[in-house]
Length: 65
Image (cartoon, rainbow, N blue to C red):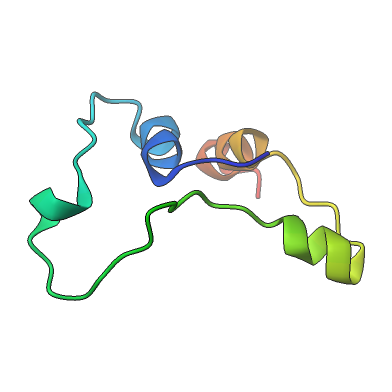
């Protein structure tokens, strides 16, 4: 499923993280407005169905990878 960077970090760290705006990062390079992690093109172009990112994190953190 589609996931934002904020959701991804929350699942990994399981701690309170405050989202910030691009303006608050004080970076010189421009950033995209929509920064969701979306791997739908790999399915469309190559037929690869990716695992649910939450399940993959659980497996990785449990040491069963």
